[in-house]
Length: 308
Image (tube, rainbow, N blue to C red; front, side, top):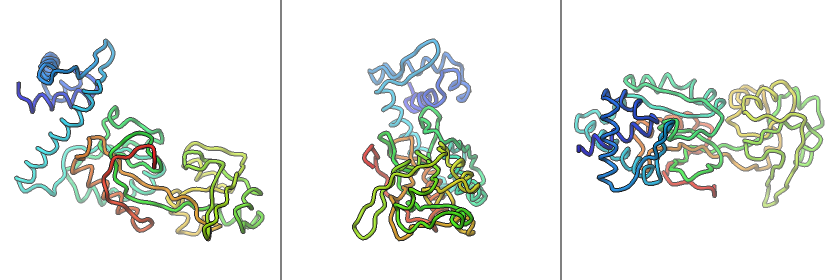
């Protein structure tokens, strides 16, 4: 058994979810894939896959082996590329996940530069507000903000302040907001995914003030929050990223800027263990550059748990 071929086959099976799909990608017959996986399980001495008539599910040992195998394959590929003098060239496909709003405002519009720098790279952008499973969706790198619910390997690539946003027209037609408690007299568009929901903690000079806000509209997507605020429905308490174009143009302004709200962290989350591919790392750096004029970035790659 060729161990490199066996690892490559196993990785394809996990990422495609079936023997037949992996066989199609590898341009071999399905029986060949099944035979290689059986030989691989005999070699490592543990069950790597749970098989049923409808699906394949990696065991805990199988998932650990997948991460190690993919990392080993990527290290070999990068070593070959470096030896050939092509270490700076990115090619093949890269699968990226990001939320709809952040992807539209801060990634898509900057993609011409990234694609021009890497003409042999094909990019597959998954824009979805749901927290997708990177392994199941075959994602190489996900751009996520806030707390990360599971243990992941991630690199902090930015941090943005949160502000109290509304249009100037809204502020002009409603009571002034001079202190956090004044928000109780206003309609706040409730957006739970941004972290605070109905309760926000403002800080200034070592003093914290906890404010419960209220509003007639609750939304579950950042695009909904944007449209509601731009339609003068109410106030949005959110990060600068959400209204970056309008804040720059003056269409949207902020209040209580002398008070501090919890900042929002931005992460590049990698699905392949500690050794992320060169393509995934390059894309993370690209996104960091896209937002670096608005935020302070980070660079350490670290495992992230529930304690963010």
